Image (cartoon, rainbow, N blue to C red; front, side):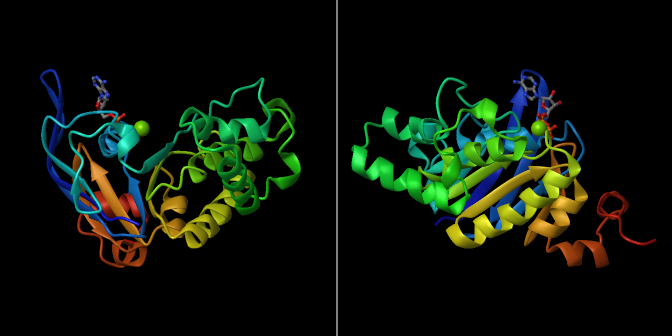
Length: 238
Ligand code: ADP
Ligand code: MG
């Protein structure tokens, strides 16, 4: 397992600074939720942790190790996106196995890992189906399965439920909370949905314009919002 730390991170695209000097500690094993309006820099932050973007200044530490210069594949993280692109011609099992096969992991270990992920995600009876034969929620579980098999220390999830309907989102929220409990991994979860943030997080990070407005447990933010922006976002009573 691993703590994630962002140390004086600045990110600019050309002349545009989208994140100025940000510091954040995500505790080991926590379910940390990043919230904030569209365009405030949530995905950029996640992508820097994943190594898909390089910070203009500052350091990214995972488990105390400076990984700022490291390839994404060496960071022991795994990222789940909103658009879960599964391979349509492959079965569920083949989709989940795909990354392990690329790594040339021995077949027996691959099979064990796929079976474990399928058990955790209740996909055992769907392993031979194609993605087109699955519901939206099942497909999203397959996408999460592809992360689980890699045994990451840190899961990064960027609005993974936003393409699902409200009922399914509710169900997937419960499943994500169970997943976090059963894996014990550090989860960093981006959403613009307050309900998801309040129900899933043990730590909420509220962002605005690339800066952190407040960090705290859901009820702390609700009871003692530091700014009007946080109050409005979390829905605290006036
Ligand atoms: P969020 O995920 O909170 O909606 P993003 O991190 O996607 O926000 O974007 C933050 C800001 O950075 C936005 O203004 C966006 O236009 C800008 N941005 C993100 N990626 C790039 C890029 N590759 N090039 C230029 N600007 C970018
Ligand atoms: Mg985003």
